[in-house]
Image 1: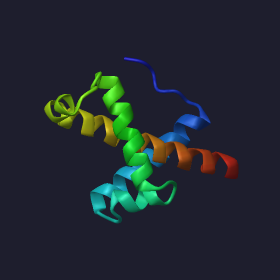
Image 2: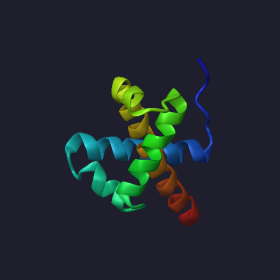
Image 3: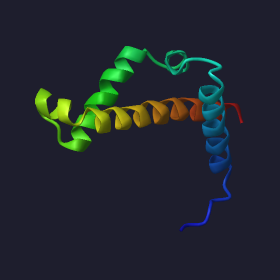
Length: 95
């Protein structure tokens, strides 16, 4: 196991991820609304799914149908990472 960094970027990221978790757990807002604050959700959804398919080596609809759960999980992680990245950059500019 690696040691947690003690860098300002780590603490910014941790704060942003924790806030995102709080929002989703409390149902404060739907995740789609959170995404819409930084990018068009349909555009990000398409790109995220394409990235997931690339990672999984999916090239056909039938492959996607068989691996939809994995592809969806990867696409969801991509969505979250994108939102955290956008928020991180905005927070960093304000610091």
